[in-house]
Length: 104
Image (cartoon, rainbow, N blue to C red):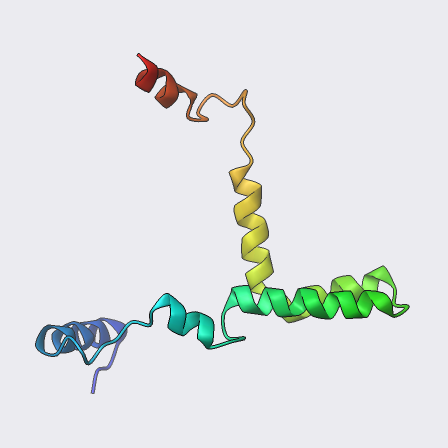
C-alpha cells in the first residue's frame, strides 16, 4: 500500500504502463453527460436559480451571499482569470512586440 503521494503516482504510472485500459480518462461527452458535477454545469444551474430568486422580493445582499456561498471557488477562479486577462494597450509587455516581429 503506498504511503505518500509520490508512491501513489509511481504505482499509477506502473499500472498505466502494464495496462493502458486500466486508467481511463473521461471524454468530453462523458463529462458533459455527468450533469451537475462540473463547475460549468454548476454555474449554469446557479444562474437559473438566481433568475428565479430575482422574481421574488429579496435584497441584493441576500443574492450576493447565496451566489458566493453556493458557487464558491468556481466563480472566484473565473473572476481572477478574467481580471488577469485584461491588459491595457499601454502596458509595455502586451504582445505588441511579438506582432511587430511577425510583421517584419
